[in-house]
Image (cartoon, rainbow, N blue to C red):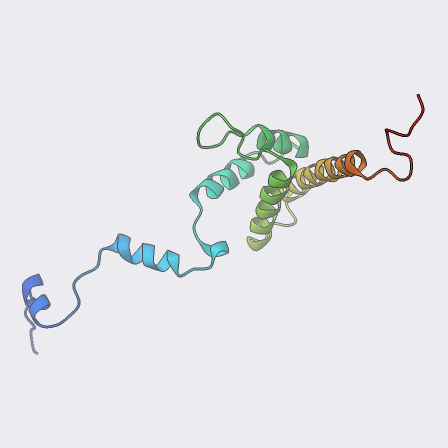
Amino acid sequence: MKIETVMSARSLERSGNPPVETLESRLLAASQSLPDNKRPDPEFDLLYQQLLAMEGQGEKAIYEFLRTLRGADGESRAYPDAKALLAVTLKVLVQLKDEKLEKTLIYKEVSGANGLAFSLDLFVKGFLREVFKPMEDDAWEKSEW
């Protein structure tokens, strides 16, 4: 049986082997090679766990929680408009589906919150379309009082 001796770091450097990399640098390099949708997102993971804990409270409670959630600065809202609410609820639904939880109550509730965000977005877009739609032949200046 042959016993190999342990080499020191200096002898490894002299022998032409690459220097030892730290675990953090290897993790950083690995996470940068992942596509954007597969990178770890600790903020989203925390939100996801909070929403899982809210199971059974209903879609309106989840929607209100997301609507009033504060950002990293503690002042501004994390999801300031209907489009942002729609995006985050959709991301949560995708995560739930990836974990094969689409038949659970939380999936139904988040789906309802997604519907509320969609309705609000649709209402705002319809309102803006009415406000900014061009007048036909009856311009405000030509209309009689």
